[in-house]
Each structure stands twice: as structure tokens, then as C-alpha cells.
Amino acid sequence: MKQNHDTDEVSSLDVDRRNLLKLTGAGVAAFGVMSFIDLPFAKAQDMSNGANNFYKSDKVTVQKVTFKNQYQMNVAGNLFTPSDLDRTTKHPTIIVGHPMGAVKEQSANLYATKMAEQGFVAMSIDLPFWGESDGQSRNLVSPEAYAEAFSAGVDFLNTQPFVDSARVGGIGICGSGSFIISAAKIDPRMKAIATVSMYDMGSANRNGLRQSQTVEQRKQFLAAAAAQRDVEFAGGEVKLIGGTTHELTADTDPIQREFYDFYRTARGEVTPVGATPLTTTHPTMTSNAKFMNFYPFNDIETISPRPMLFISGDQAHSREFSEDAYKRAAEPKELVWVKGAGHVDLYDRVDLIPFDKLSSFFDQHLA
Image (cartoon, helix red, strand yellow):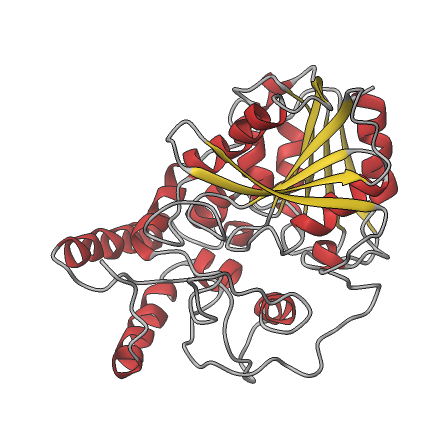
């Protein structure tokens, strides 16, 4: 089956998506409505507070890596090491996951680079079905495979002679915050977990932001997604939903404007090989239903006594998820509010991201 990029069919498909997503608070509030209008980069992207998604450091060496997960799929990563790393000794190491719908070149590479500057070995990864990692159909939602990617990353890191397998931690950004928690609950090799601008992708899809979606709306979405499975099994086109809008209008909501400024401008736009700007950030409709069965915070307290750090902007539309996780987690735990920061601000605004706090957290707990 192929994904639809045929402009002759765009109009009717876009109407279908708009009607569908009006049913779901998650669709409108968290991800917005997909439009297939392909506009050039906005010229007025907000580069304030040190926005630097594509930051590179002459103090850090980068190596592309791939490794197998338990499904025998290749997971792609970038391994960041301090340029003066003593490879005859073992070092604390951090695995970094990108936002939902993104790729490792968006936010995860930045965080990994900054942690390597602080002396850590760090590795960003592409979640399966996204970026350079394996998986068909592309843009498939698979919470279990996403969590497995973090454990597979630990598998790989533990084979490196300069990695101390007793001192491996992780950072999950946005949706990866919920995926790395899901992984850490069953993989005690991850000794310390930090999340930044976390989204609970299960709750966001079931309930919408601030519990804005009803059970009946959820059921309507599930019925539509199930009907679409029949269409695609019979050879019909794969439908994409959600993600970041491709155009700004007078009616575009503030959350979508926030995402647009990162994903649809030169500030943070990345189009992986094999994708197009029309497909980036957008999950497949039929697989997105899997998030309804995703409960990453159930049993989060069992991660203790391994420490957890939750970082969120105090103005972030997603702050409810970090608050919920913190409330449920057992000690040791810490919740840090970044004053004046929104959700996407902590993707790349280096003057706002508390890298010093992340460094001290891992210094202490991967000692």
C-alpha cells in the first residue's frame, strides 16, 4: 500500500480529515488539522532565546550508528562523544528520544550534543517508522515499538567499550517522554530518566488537552479509524492525520502556531529521505488508534528508586502531563518549571533549556 500524495485527490481527503479531527479534542487541540498546501518556509520564524535546533559543537564527535531491536528492525542513531574522550575507560551515557512525529535531527541531536559537551556519551535515535529507522508503513504509530527502541539503544550502548553499562540514563522529549517512561518501567538498565515538555500520548489522544474530549468523540474516531482499515486492506490509500498544519490562517490556534514555527520553518524543518514536507509529523490514521490503549504512567512508581526528573515550561500547553507523571511517580523525583517557556520553546531555545540542571541530575545519579 502507498501513501497518498496525488494532488488530484487532496481536496476530498483533506475535507475528510478536517471532519474527522473535529470529533476529537486531541486532534484539534494537540495536533491540529492537516492541510496539504505546501508553502515555502516562513521568513519570520521566531529565533529568540537562542533557538538553535541545528547546533553543532567543535568539542563533540558525531558518528552515525544502526542497531537491531527485538523485532530485528534497524534503529538509526547518532552517537555523540566528547572529542577528547578517553576510550580506554568507561563513561556515563545518555540516550535521547525526539518529539512525536519528529526525527532525531529535531531537538534530540541538540540535546545529545549539549550533553556530550558536558562530558557524557550521548546517542539520539529515530523511533521505528520515522526518520532513518526501519518500519513500514512510514509514520506508523506503535507505542510498544517506540519503547523497545530505547531498550534496543541500551543493548547497543552496552556493547561499546567506553560505555559504563551501570551508568546509562535517558532523556525523552515531548512524546518520547512517555515512551521512555514506558521502557524504563520494564528495563531497569536505565538508571535515571529525564523528560522535557512531555506529552502523554495516550491521554492526549483519549482525552484531549485538559480533558476536552468526550468518550463519545473518542468512539467516533475509533469507528472512523476502523473503517479506514477496511479501505486500506482492500488496497486503498493510506490516510495521514494530525501533525502540524502546513498553512497559517486567521483561525489557526495558538498551539498550532507554536508547532508551525518549529516544524514548518527553517528554524526546525527536516524532511527525511523518502518523505515529503506533506508527510512529515503526520501519523497514519489507522495506527493512531493504538494510542488509545497506551497508559505510560500506570505503574510509574515502580521505576523507583531510580530517579526521575520532569522539566516543563510553566507556560506550556502540555504542562498537565508532567504534573500528572510527577504526582504518580515515587521518590526520588523532581519537577522543574522553566519560567516563561512554552512547550516547543524547550525543543531548541538554548537560552531557556536548563542544560545545567540536566547535567547535574545525571552527574549525581549516574555517578
